[in-house]
Amino acid sequence: MYDYASSEQSGTHLNSPIHFAKGKWSTHEIPLDNLIGAAIVVDISAKAAQNSNYQLKVSDIADWEKKHGIVPEGVIVLVYTGWAKFWLDRSKYYGIKPDQNNSLSFPGG
Image (cartoon, rainbow, N blue to C red):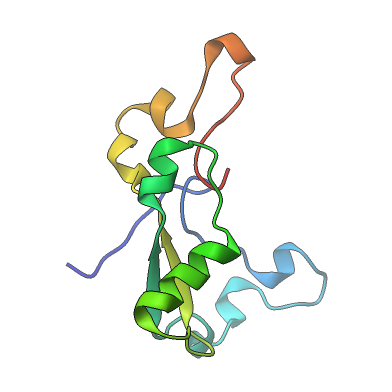
C-alpha cells in the first residue's frame, strides 16, 4: 500500500546531484532526511484534461493556498495531473501525434 514505482523519465524519479555537477553527492550519499518529509498535493488534473501541455503555474499554488493555507516551508510539493489513467495507452500517455513528427504532448513535458 505504501510502495511507489515509476519508469525513468516518465514520472517522478531521482537524479542525484552528481548527475549535473562534478563533485556533488551520488545517489547513495544523499541524506535520507533530504528525501522524505511532509507533502502537499496540488491537483491540476482538470487543467491538464483541457490542455495536454499544461504546466504548473504560480496561480495553481496560489489557488491551493486559498483553500489550504500557506505552503509550509520545506514541504514536498507533489503535482497531480491525472495523467496516469492513460498509462496503458502509450500514444495518449506521451501525447505522440504521428502527423507531427512524433512530438510529445503531456502535462509538464
